[in-house]
Image (cartoon, rainbow, N blue to C red; front, side, top):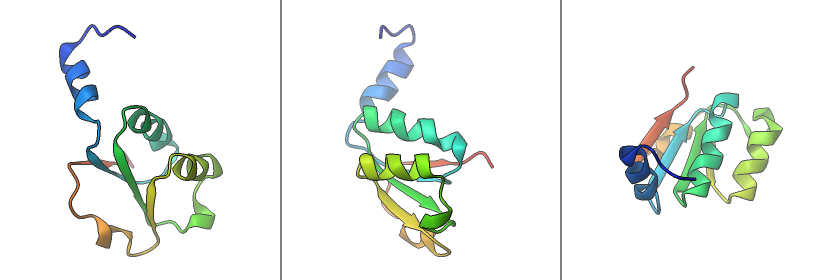
Length: 90
């Protein structure tokens, strides 16, 4: 895909091997998991929900993409050492 925006191209290229935290596993962050995976970011996901409460499609992506998942009440205890943190809009 050709880029029309050099800043976006630079951002995409800089995601490779960056440690990225995604906070919140609602439907709105599902496309973000694909985006980060396609750019070879090292992704960890965080949510207060337990695994049985996470959307099946999102959970499938986490497992398929081999992302670290920190779930449950104390999930944010592991939010340390990330290059980028993305929080759910809700």
